Structure formats: structure tokens, C-alpha cells
Length: 192
Image 1: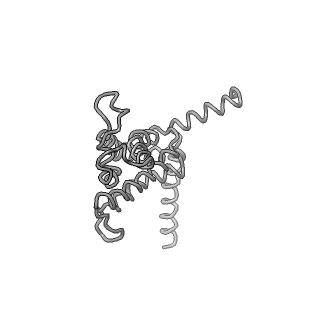
Image 2: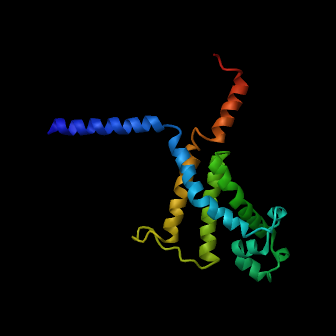
Image 3: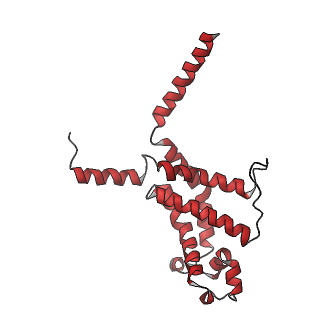
């Protein structure tokens, strides 16, 4: 019996040790960024598009829709007049609008990926807060056996972002390419 258990342990350690060795340094960062690209990128891109003007130059015009979605109650209290809002509301609306465009791209391509991931995590927390307080969305609760609720969904959203923020985007990323280029530039050509 002991030899059977030992054989299973060795098989387990051998198989999963090989998987760990083969994927070390590149797979989890790349896969986390793939999950973000596959699940959140288009969502945030479409959301951001509802907040800007039409056409190419519309990218530089934050519309009333952005104020309604991000600072709805304050915008309503200001009589739907953006100029009547205080500066912090404008900063929040502009940061939220352009954050939806920029942060996912930074994470996906692996350029300043950790900063982008931390920004997206903060964005998800603010988005969740606005959904609950500004739009009256019921968040649900964790550990209740109903995984389709908002809190469960947002927890799944931030899981790959936490990985990228903590461990980095992996070897297959612009961060790694730029870092290697920069280090080679500082130390001179590598010996042959």
C-alpha cells in the first residue's frame, strides 16, 4: 500500500513539477492578460464609447452621458449642467472615461501592466460603489451559493488583475521587452 501511495505521489510531483517548470515565468501572466482581453476589454471599450462624442475627434469630447453614468446624482443636482459641477466631479468623470480606454490596453499589451492592473482594480471598486450608490444596483453577497451576483462577478474580474499587479505581466509582454532592451543598453552588448 505504501509503495502505491509513493508511486502516486511521485507521478503527481513529476507531472505537476514538469508543468510548473514549462510554464514558469510566462504562462500565468500571459493567461491572466488573455482572460482580461477576452472578458473585459470589449465591455470597457463599449462602455467608454458611450461617454465620448462621435467620430475620431469625438474621442476628445466627454459627453453628458459620461456625467450621467459616473456622477449621476451630482449631475442631476447641478441641473444637468456640467459647468456647475465642482472640479473633483470633472476629474472623476474624465479619469473614468479615459481609464476605460487606456487601462485595459496597458494590461493586455503588458506595458506598465502592474500600474494598469492596479488602476483597473481601483476602477472596478469605484464602478461597484457607483453601481450601488448611484444606480441602486443590488450587489448581492459573497458565499451565498448564487454566483451570478455583482460582487461575485467583480471578484472574478479582479482576480487576473491581482495576479498581474502582484506578479507582473509575464515574460511575453512589452514590459519585459523594454526592460531587456533597457538593461542591454545600460550594460552594453551581451557577450557572444
